[in-house]
Length: 281
Image 1 (cartoon, rainbow, N blue to C red):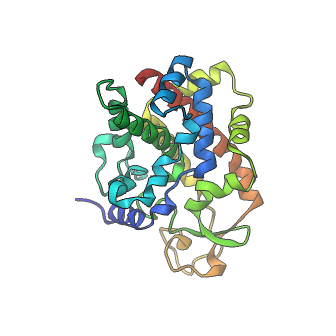
Image 2: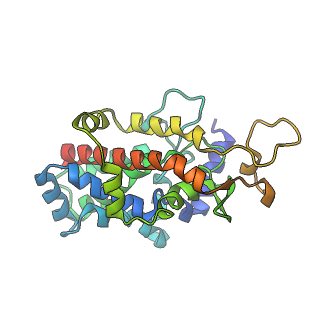
Image 3: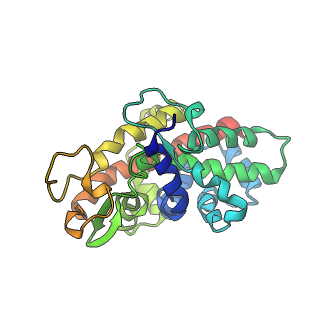
């Protein structure tokens, strides 16, 4: 039987599709930029041919942009996330349903379409756009949600004094507060990486990469701003409504602590995307 928290996770994200744009435009474009830097030249050429001359950075935000056309693409809204609960050790795409999100499932399906050279170019180009975006989503820790707070969407916090939610902080606020272009972000995230780092980054598969996100997830939640009156088994600022004084106040310290994590996840997403495309195209 589907656990009720998992159902809430899916339904709420469908109703708030604008809140699941992992990494924002800048982050996704940086992943595309990093990927092309690590792809074989012939793979870059094939990818750009499918994209009518555009690069991966340009194509990386398309899967979010089509949210403006729900009649055609509404069925894709739950492709951007998956639900992997803390107590579940085993997990792969076969465990996903419409109530948990189809992130792993759809990366596999879109790669299969992309690999099929007999498929129409339009279908392969669309599949490529999805792969570029969804691999990035899998590396945003809150897009591998625990099933109880909509991937941090219900966790009310402030960011430099402005009320928002933890998911939004991770989708874009940390990145945007540093004022970097996507090329600068890609460059900064790539600095200091050795050949051994690159080889290590390419190991594994989408399941193990998503498991990394799962393991990181717990550390992202700030402590309570106001101690609960009674013992609870959940963070009170993740259960709406939330009083202003109960919202954790995030800013310089939080951003400084987690910017290296953001850099690492963006870099890993780009290198791993490059590996998948080299294997597929």
